[in-house]
Length: 487
Image (cartoon, rainbow, N blue to C red; front, side, top):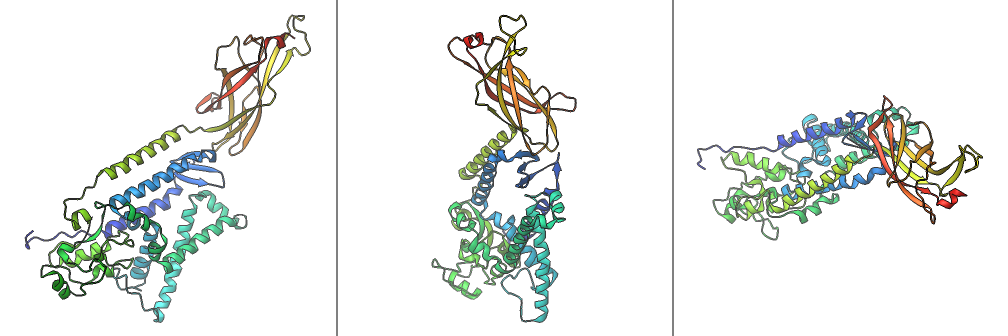
C-alpha cells in the first residue's frame, strides 16, 4: 500500500452499541408480546406453565427445557470457537450494564470521567462535587437496576400478572424479595465489583481457553509490525517508542502510547498476548486504529486469528470442520426440539383402570338370561380419567372408544353420556364406564384382554370434535370367559 493511499478506519464501538440497543429493546419488549395469550418465553412456576415460541406447555412437558439449555450452551461454545469471547463483549448483560453505568452515566451524563477512551483512571473521589455526582450515579443506576430486575422477573411472572401482584405486595413477598435481591446484586456488581466479575467470578473465561484454536478470531496485537513489547516470560521489554525501536528495530510501528491499555475495561495490555481477561470488546482495536491512522498505517491490534496474524500461515479459516460440527449439532438439537414441540398435546389425559377386572349386569335389571326374552348381559369396565385443560379458557371434552383388534360387536360409553366441562389449570377426575352387550369373543378358558384406543377431544364452538385439541391413549377392556356369562 502506498503512503498516498488513505487507510480506511473501521470502528467497532458503534456496531457494539447498536447490538446493545437491540438486545435491550428485545429483552424489554419481548415479555409484553403475546400471541393467542401466549408469550415467546415464559417459565411460570406460579401457574405451572411453560410458554415457548408463543405455544403453551404444561409443566409435565418440561422435558423441552434441557434442549433449550443445550441450544444455549452449544450456541455460546460454537460462538467462542469462532470468535472468542464475542458473547462477553457484544451480548453479555454484565458488559452492557457496565457500558451504561461507566460510559453513559458516569462519563457522558455526569462528566465524572473525562473520556470513555480512558477506563483506567478513576475520578478523584476526594472532591465534594464528585462525591455528589457519585451518589446521583448510584441513584440513577439503582432505578435502572430495578427495571432490569423486573424485566428478568417478567420471564417467570408475566407483566400482566406482575403489576397486578404489586397491588397486593403482602401476598407476593417472594416475588418482591426476588426483584429487590436481583436489583441489589446488580447495584453491587456494576458499581463495586465491576469487571472483576468477568475476571474472577465468571467461569466462562476458564472455559474459553479449552475451546480456542489457532483460527479463533479475537483481538490480537501484530508484533511483526508493531514490535515485541513483552518477552515469553511476560516481562515488559519497552516502555517508550524509543525503547520499542531499540529492541525491535526502526521498522517497529508501536508508539508505546498505551491507548490500547487505557481503554481496556478489564485492565489488560493486549500486547502481552492472549489473556483470559480479554472479553473481545475490541475497544483496543478502535484505540489503535485512531492512533495508527495518524501515520496512515493500519491498526496494530486487529480482530483476527493467531493463524493469520501471529503465525503468518495464511488467511483465517472461518468455516472449518469444528465450526461446521457445532452448526450441525446445533441444527440437530433444534430439529429434535421442533419435532417434539410439534407433537405437543393441547390437553393432558391419564387413564387408570380400576382394580376390579370387570362387572356383569343384566338389562333390564333383575331379569334372567335365557328365560326372559328381552333380557341381555352387560359387561362393564370402569376407568378413572384424569383430564387437564391446558388452554386459557374452559372447554368441553368428550371421547370415543375403538377396539384395536377385530371383535364380534362394539364397546360403548355407558358413563358419562354427555360432554363435560373442564376449567383451565385444574385437573378433573372423571369416572368412566365402558360396556358391551355383545359376545365380543368366545373364550371358554380365560378372560380376554382386548386392547382399545380412547380418543379424547375438545368440542369447538359448533359442538364438533376439535382437530387440534385431541389425544389418543391406549387402554384395555377385559371381557369374561364364556362360561361365566352363561352362569
